[in-house]
Length: 220
Image (cartoon, rainbow, N blue to C red; front, side):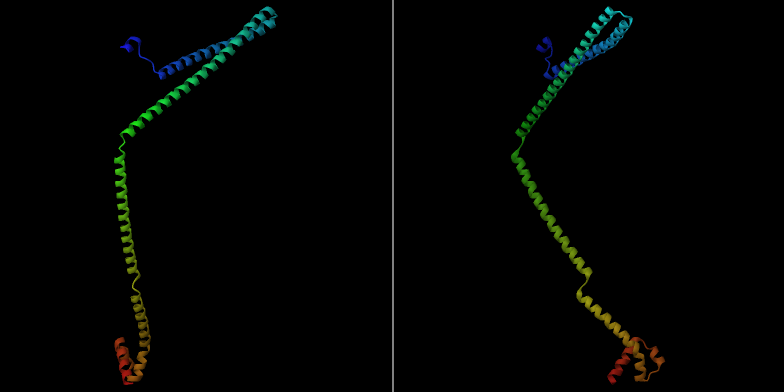
């Protein structure tokens, strides 16, 4: 009802914006008048020079007085323009401060509401449950890592082989090498000792040659 009769009440922020608009308008008017006066100064300077050149002393003085008066007006307008700009900066600062104050106020109200609605026992329960789950997960991860390490160690051990097998393999290779060397000289010995011909010896395989040599050794 009162708003309908007397109009809507302006907020401080709206009043500040209104003052800013008024100051900007005044500054534009001052700038316009200053520009006109500067053009008038140039015109008066030309008239002063013309009157002096023509020897019209009284007329020259009149133009000179108008020139000085106009220059003073220009100085006053410039000072007024600087003051308007300073006022605009002050209003802008007040406006920014008001905005910051309102922002802080809203933030404080929001934090107060959050603190009022915050369920601390529930948050503590959730935090404890989260900690237990993390500990359980870390334990499971540790067990899995240990299992994987054991499996990898067993696999690497199998790949590396049993030392006993290596020793047996080496001994077998050395025995085979020695057997081959013995078999290389066996035909000649068998020929001399058994009276077999070279052809018959050549037809014998390695096992037969070895058996013939063993039989010869038994005879000895």
